[in-house]
Each structure stands twice: as structure tokens, then as C-alpha cells.
Image (cartoon, rainbow, N blue to C red):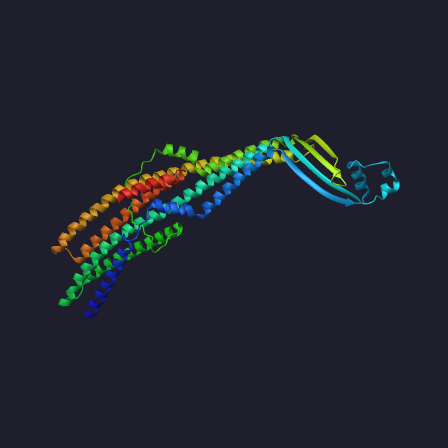
Length: 462
């Protein structure tokens, strides 16, 4: 019996130090991070978000490039060439205005001496009509800008939801841990009193071992919730770039029901503002424009051009010549034109069908998320009543226990039931909050404004 008592005392001592360590970890000596602060840091350093922001900048430069295709283009060319090629020599003498009767000698024509030619020219070109190709380039660039913007919003929304899930998980597990610590302290205390009977020559009975089993179960649940809390906090610390040792969360989730519009209103909002729908809509529009351009591809393109050129054998002698004109080009015979038009038309039809399909999927997702939120809000009312009834039961059983009318296993079972009710309650609070965040996400409304609303409610709950 003395060995049993020594082991029990050792277990109690270890439990005391472990509980003290947990309380120290949750103490207010370290500044707790609010959800708004965490979210700001995570967004600032997220690499995927930085990548899509870079893509947005590239699309902006693409738009500038497309717009400047309408501007005149000028080029400067300079060259020095020395050759005894008959054609080069003959043409050089003509351009340099040095051609004479002597140059018509048959031997000089066939075997000219090496000729020097300094060439300098300025060329200017201006598109007049491009059959919509240049305009399509601008539309394409603008589509890419809009797509990059939607991608950025989508990544930001997904990132916000990830942070909220971990944050709410940490707050839930922290609350469960505190409840488990209280139940564990009470259980250890009563087990200690029961074990003192051994010093009076009484052998522990079935009730004692049953109570010990309940106590160990409570300890196991405390360990699980503490580990889950540490995992969530560790993930948030890494995402926020903070030191995991000094990063803690000390908050409470709001038990208030969020203000949510009617289901039909949320669906209509989602169909207008959700990012995947907007991207699909942009793709459809881009294919429509591409189809229009491809149909006009058989039309001529017109460009005006001008050139001033000088050719000489010495710098001080530089006669100039000019060339101006209008150039028209068009495909005279292209047997592939009809096939290319049909391909883009089929792609446009496919994009339209995809847009319709996404709309149906959005309606399903929003409806499910809405029903989940409403169900979790209703369930929270029931779980609150369950927790309150379990607390009343514990208070009554403790009175009976002090009067010696119930055994230690009876009181610990009620304590265990209270812990189960509290755990279920905290999980339901988590479910309601995360269901609201998910509803905002699937309806395309999850933003930093949503985070601000949640942050205000968590501060109020404290």
C-alpha cells in the first residue's frame, strides 16, 4: 500500500507542475496576438500573393505596350559597307549621285573597283487600319489585368479563411484546455482523498479504480486539446513570421449570431462578385473578341510609311532621298480561315457553358454554406442549454458528495459529463464562426472588412 501511495503522490506532483506550465504558457506576460494583427502580417509576407501582384504589374505593362502600337514608330539606321560586287557598286554610284558615262564601261560594270558606301536613314511607320488586331491587343491586356486582380482577391480570400480556421481552432482548444484543467484539478484532488483510505488499512475498491480511470480520461483530453492548440498557434506564428516561443493567442470566440442577409440575396451577390465567375466571364469575353478579330482576319491592313536616306562615299558629301507611301496587305487566299473561325467559336461556346456550370455550382455551395451556418447557430442554443444543465448537475452532485450520499466515481462521472458538454459547446461556437467565414468565402465577400467584424466581436467577447 505504501508503494501505491508513493506512486500516486508522484503522479500528483507531475500533474501539478504540468498544469502550472500550461497556465504559464497562457499567461498574459506575453502580448497576445489579435486576429486583425495576425491577418495583416500573414498577408504582407505571403509569397503567393506577392507573385500574383507581380503578375498584375506585368499585365499593366502589357496594356501600355498594346496601346502604344497605335503610335508612330521611328527607327535610325547607319552602316558602312565596302564591296566590289557589281550590283552594289552600280547602285551605290546611283544613290550617291556619282554615276557618270565612264561607269558604263563594260569592264567597270563587270569588274568594278571596291566601292565605299556610308548609309544613314530615318524610317517612320504609322498603322492606319489593322482590322481590329491592335484594338484586340488592348482588350487582351485589359483582360489579363482583370484576371490578375481577381486572382489576387481569390488568393487573399483563401488566405483569410486559412488564418481564421487556425485562429478559431486555437481559441476553441484553449477554452477546452482551461475547462479540462479545472476538471483535472478537481479529479486529482478527489482521487487523493480516496487514496488516503489506504493509510487506514482499507483496500481500494472498484469505485476507486473507476474514478481513477475517469481522471486519466480527463487528463488525456487535456493533453489532446493542449497539443491541438500548440499546433494551431505554431502554424499561425510561421505564417505571420513570428517567434513561436513568444506567440500566444488569448481570446474568446463570439457567441453572437452574425447578421446574414436572406439566402436569395447572398446567391445573387455571389453570382455577381465571386472571383471564379468573374474570371470565367472575362475568358468568355476574351474569346468573343478573338472570334470577332478572326472573322475580320481576311480584311486588309493598311500602314503609312516614310523614309529619308542618304548614301555617300564621304561624310561631307551626303545627298538625301526620300520614300513615302501607303502599304496594304491582306490574305488573298487562306483555306484555313474558316476552320480557325470555327475553332474559336467552339471555344466561346465552351466558355459560355463553363460559366453557366460555375453559376450552378456557386448556387449549390452558397446554399450549403448558408444552411450550415443556420444549423450551427441553432445548435449553439441547444449546446448552451446542455452546458448550463451539466453545470447545474455538477453543483448539485458536489453538495451530495460532501454529504457522503454519492461516491467518488459518481461525482467524477458528472465532472466528466460537464467537460464533454463544455467541449461540445466550444466546438459548436467554433462551427458557427467558421461557418460564417465559409459563407462569406463562397459568396465572394470574405475580405479584411469581414476580419474587422470578427476582430471586433472577439474583443467584445473578452
